Image 1: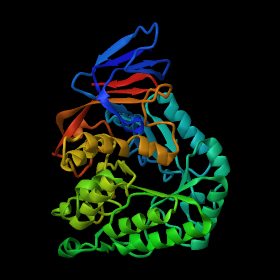
Image 2: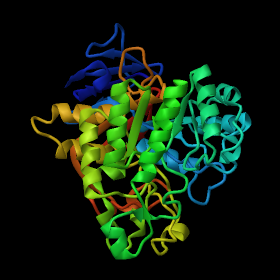
Image 3: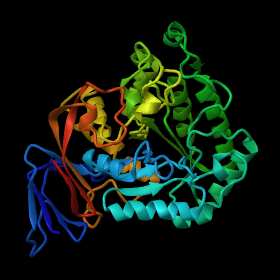
Image 4: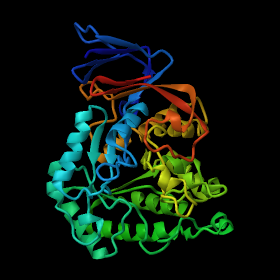
Length: 429
């Protein structure tokens, strides 16, 4: 299919472009920017007047719930949610059932995703067998099967020597280890941020030091091994200060934040709203402001959706019994735009470009993917959206099988008009 996207505002932070330029697509690739190639006759023309044209979003944490949790969500429903949200590349954690610790399981997931011909799926392999934190997986075989890195998801490694061995092995073969900094003991049974709000509601707390103590351990092991680590879902001001120091020291570390944590804090639990039950928990207003500042100064590399669809049976429960998590694929673009608008000190161009970078080429760079840019010759993964249009977050408006989010009822900016994946029009509103 030959596609001509005309009159749109092209925002491509990877190439430093923010200007009105046409995009030309053929054979699944971008074949021209601004200037049509010779003898180019499009099969379809999309008029993007008044719209923004950006690289397809790259989401570093999307639980697709297959295999094993199809009652919560299916690959079909979540891939549809992805393209409706402008997401063309997804990284999925290994905490499926069975766990992604065998090459056959990874190949099966990749095959299922490819057969749907929608977004690209990039699995993370389990760092340890069964995510039990004891024996390392066959990382080389999992990489051959299609894994782009290794993670424990939310499962802890109790034995630090196992984590040390994992980082040594990863360094030898130049793999990235994705870790969520959380002490396995502190706050293990906590369900909300340790602070006045949790005390007032009588909820057990997760202290900030559960994040910082884990970070001290990770950084010491990085110094010893030289391994590359990506920190998943940072949540606290104190933790971000440690990341800032580690980066200035030259450690090969990157980090992301869940889109929910940019806008919400522990007070948004309100009167036990289980939609606001998150892992890590929503922290204090001070932590939220530190997250927003760290996004602006580059300490936080990437914004992810932390997409975790949960069904009614596990969410419509008292706060302490409800499963943590929220749907996020369709909100990632809008929540990033909302941050850009609220941090806009000038004409909005620089902040918008910075927000787009956090969900496109910076995310692709962290994951080691050839995505997140609109360079000539690259795969034609494109998101076209109206940055001025607002939409109301309602369960019936979401394609995801998970209808639970703390943003239900909110008006958010940014409506996706079309999503192109590998040159084919996967979604058009």
